[in-house]
Image 1 (cartoon, rainbow, N blue to C red):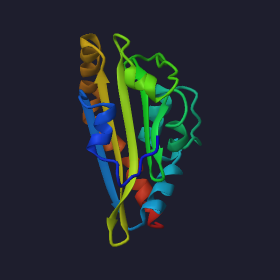
Image 2: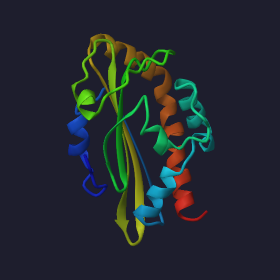
Image 3: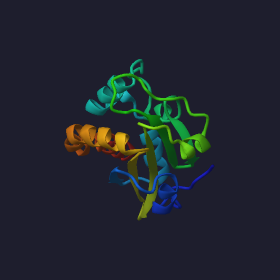
Image 4: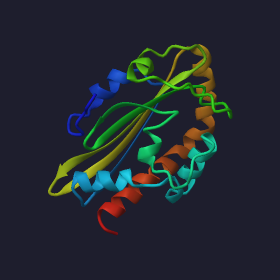
Length: 185
């Protein structure tokens, strides 16, 4: 499925996960065209983002620091749901609160949409660049987590109580780096 960054809106994301127990959203404007900003974001490597890169590699063992975030969101344990010229929506399912790599391999967007295994969550990751006008663009990143049942909701709440307060500090880091790169700084 192809989605344009200009058409990516709340309804598109709601089509995948409308009732999220956890929802985060970050945006960063840059003095650059959407294409330049998107290309800068696509090229960010896990090892360049400090805390976030280390956290991702801790949660998904075996990832190389040279791996780009764009490559990460296109491979297991993620599943590409929709993509476009300046947009990528990916999902994963499983027990995100365990230290085990407890993520099933999804066959595609339909399996993500229909996922209902008890004690698990569905997680949507949306990243896109859109024009702001006057040669500027904005890079956006949104994550939504939907528990499948009450047990998963309780586990997610406990996890989010611990990591939630740090999320704004960590998740915005790659957006700022991409904006600086797109601006040539």
